[in-house]
Image 1: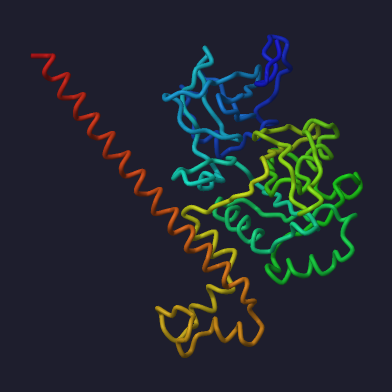
Image 2: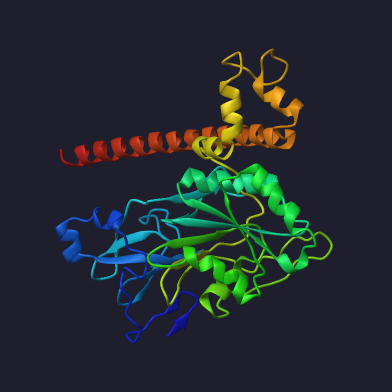
Length: 356
């Protein structure tokens, strides 16, 4: 029986949880009772109405309900032997963003990722400020960032693009590839082995799905081109999905994100803009706003050309954004907590009166 949630039958091949990315971090969370009485599964796919979970013996569909916590691709779950949800294990890493649009909500992108491939194409869509945004999200989550510059065959000046990235962050691993060339994409395999989980992140049309297909050795993900008028990509991946490499390693493909608004990302931003943080700490005044104050090391670096004005402006923009979104989400969580408290008190009072 086939459906968009995968193959559901008793003839499915067995998988070891090690091949799904199981590590001691998750093993240590289990009690002996849980290990003996529960199935361990990992979320392979996230659709609008449910999740596909892979256990050692089968694929299971979990419908989204009020009883189910918010999950995402890469999560590890415990299920009972009737395939009912028991709990989600603590995550080693979690990628999230503010939900697109005006809605005040957090949206999970992927969980338990070891390495994040930040994919950017070498065309008019190349944007340093966007790359800094992705780097902040990856570093906030605690994963290893690797920048993949794609469509090298369409770029006449690869050197200047690469130089711009290394000037932005000299510690960043950078690979330049043509996703349609197997020899070039093979350099990415050193991150895709064992129980390592790699997530692909980036805008639409930058070549994420092409790279996933190249590493899988099969056209499992739909691919598409870019619009010629503005070099913007078309959405080809519409849901998050996890793929297991035959030789080891796990890949997570995510839809292209036009909007990646930050939430509570101070550590990630400070790691991404460590040079600016260091300069600010050397300013004469602790509360320096880096405008016209005397002894401002940030303004001095910009004037001397050792700090790019664009980079500093982007740092300020992203800090304001995460503060605004983080505060809004915190207020929303507090309102929900108070509402839940009122409900519990009301239910307790109701039970008390019924018992009289």
